[in-house]
View 1: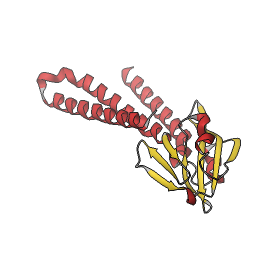
View 2 (view 1 turned 180 degrees about the vertical axis):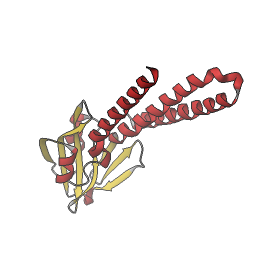
View 3 (view 1 turned 90 degrees about the vertical axis):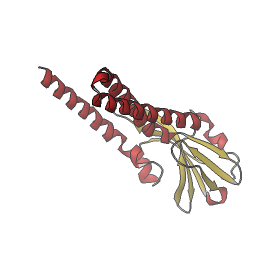
View 4 (view 1 turned 30 degrees about the vertical axis):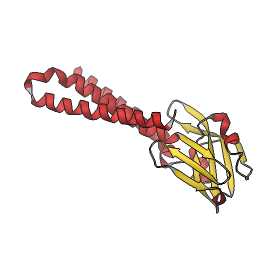
Amino acid sequence: MSIIAGRVFMLLSAIVAVVCATVAVFAIRADWVSGLVGPAVAFAAVGVVALLAGLIVFPLYVETHIDRHRIELRYVLQPRRVVPAEEVDEIIVLQRLQISGLFASANTPRVLLRGEGRVVAAYTPRCRGAALQELAPLATEPQIVPECLTPESAHRRYPGSVTSFERAMRPASLLAVLVGLGVLVWALAKIL
């Protein structure tokens, strides 16, 4: 997915959520359009869910432009960042970073640009096999880490290599399932 497509998705999701929530509020206040409340609330909920999904998924997408002088990182939800190549002492490629949900996981590569013993920038390459080819213009030879690492183990080994959200993804997905089950039990108890 491109950065522009991600930004358009987020904008459209926000517009759908806000417009439909506004329609629902006006429909509640005006008795003659009460038939719009249900559909407006449903579409607003879809917009909010899409917006939340984008907030969760899009931080993983980064477009890079690398030459021998600089590394430019463009994110969906953050401003563009430029890292001068002379700040990068070491490049580490985690070939199999296990980003886990409750029922599924994905092994994705992660590129770590390190300088002065700390992670200067970390990103997931847009194309799975292109990470090493993208790094070719830099004079530093990348260190490949072939073993599968969880976000916790990657964070212990290379602090700053994963976000706090990635480290909390499994407990958060478990909590979401438990809340959903709680709502389902509550709804069934009300019906029966």
